[in-house]
Image (cartoon, rainbow, N blue to C red; front, side):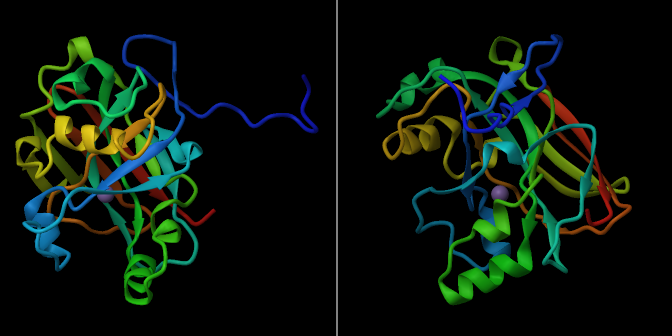
Length: 231
Ligand code: MN
């Protein structure tokens, strides 16, 4: 079998304590999964079942990295998120089976062109241009699940230039890992290499070129991302 031109490289992420890499298939992101963040975005978190949007697999970047400031925005926001790495596929997963499908976990940033998202919400258009742009998912090296102390309780935080902007606990997820991965698996057949970005807590805000973002989920991973000039 041959291709009409060279096949694109497989998107992948670093794994902690090994040179072997995690091959990325798709990136699913959960919207409004922390109450305080849902409220800061003007929504009532009590009424909504979990909903999802996606980013392309090659939006991932290893960290530490310099993230090129994207075009078309004056309001680029960080969103720190717990990231799940699926290692075993399946569909219609029961909540008590979800953990068998998770290969590892990490922390990442769901970069968002907030001005384009606001326009999309206003006009009823898709979120793709707000969320699914190039380099929009820097993610720290993945920690294998056997070494992850907890996916139900851990501090999640983000700082810009050393000043804390997001500080919460994954225990505050409206829809837990088991719940939202089960929900996702009823809509899509999950496959090895899929990532799930599980939503961001309150405190989102804008960054500009030169800012240094640090963040983490305690016990799982930390990251550092420098915001670069527009590429
Ligand atoms: Mn997000």
